Image 1 (tube, rainbow, N blue to C red):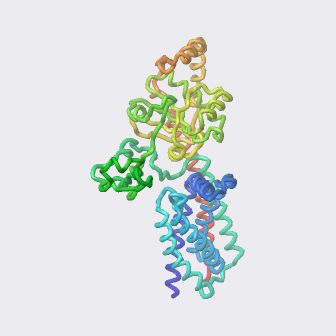
Image 2 (image 1 turned 90 degrees about the horizontal axis):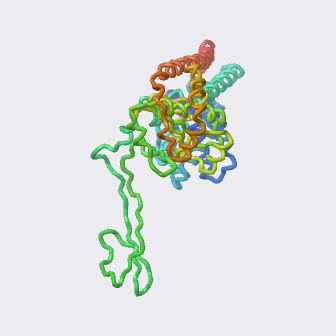
Length: 450
């Protein structure tokens, strides 16, 4: 029985460590999932807690997994584990029955399970949890409680800092479809021979004698048009087919035209600024993006796109308030949240390949790449402000270009800047991970007595 309890500890501990880690890597993803839960259960007033809860849950799960494997405070940890798993097993059963959200988000975007798969996963885990819970009085440790709780507290702090670091920048590991290096068009294609969505269609007819309506299949609908009058048709998805990794990528201009094909076919550089919610976006970053939008006028191989899911009234209000001269395109909110975990965030695309992604905190100003850029913009555009406004009013502003520079001039500097940022972030991350390792080593230097 001792070895069964040990195996149970290891299995549950590893699952919790994995679950906590993938959430800590992408705290905004966890926050979005909490927001979905609040909306589904009519608790929208709690949405302000989504991010803190996302960070807390990731740290809690990771530490719970580590303490299980280390064997700390087993009796207390087994009781906490039992309460935790009982709650989430019941919750996932409700999700599986009523499907208020499409997936529980228990493994973030690293491993997406259906609600029923999640429930059965929890049922299997509960078997191991019950073994630990009912054996809690015989499986105990006699370590120093103060030292153990200090280690647990330190690990919780460092894990929270790690999660907050990922929130401030971009996820250390990008589990989503828009990762750097992705060929977007290839991820949108549906291969030949894969299953497709299957629908069941019902035809609704009204009996002209009785006035009652009846539904029929496509095979046995009434042919007597004198007695039966067609009313409507209903289609229901009965079996979901293959869904490509990127299936909802659409960027609409103000006239309703989809610009995705234009972006993916462009042999130049396309910088896409994404803001799913302009009101919540960093206002200074939106203002700084103005310089990048102006580069489109001067560089023949560069295009700038600002995309949001905010309403046109909100776009107009914020653009007027901040003096934003660039135009906003429309995109789906979920898609924009998926592309980049920052508000706003930036994605650089060439030939349909994602070359880089940045949180607004890490994206440089043009003058940081070239100190003379602001002067160049000012000197070249100042005498033409009136003419540019006239062209814009006439609808010809998109054709107004000087083609003075090539964006390739800035790319090396941009990538070097990105490399420096990654090194700085790497140092910060290494510091946090080192502290975690020190705490773990301290636990093994003075091992717990079983």
